[in-house]
Image (cartoon, rainbow, N blue to C red; front, side, top):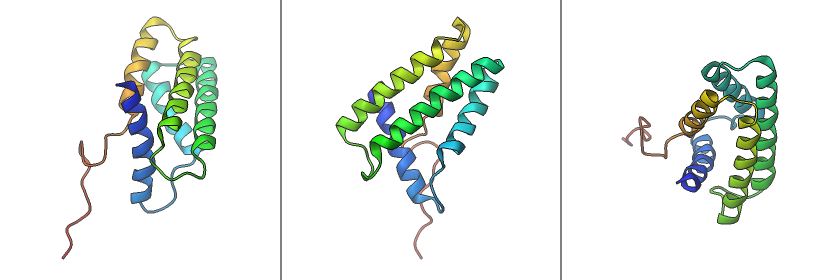
Length: 129
């Protein structure tokens, strides 16, 4: 299930950006959004925020380097490597959270994964006239 969600996250991230006008969000924009969500939802202190930002910065950089120059969606080898990056990121973040924060973190990370195209509240393009 986690593999599917991880792959889905990457596929949606690439395809959603391809469908939307403008450039895909930068690592800084993704990091800002992640920081805002986790800080608010987990009520992190300053030290925890810094460590979270570091873990997600490394994750985003590693994934970008891995998929650089290859068209979406990621292949099976890339998906396996991304899952390893996720495990490292999650272990780093969980290492400084309390039990309640860990439980909530796991829920939030799953919610941060966008729905597959065609599911959820997303709508397709307008009908052709």
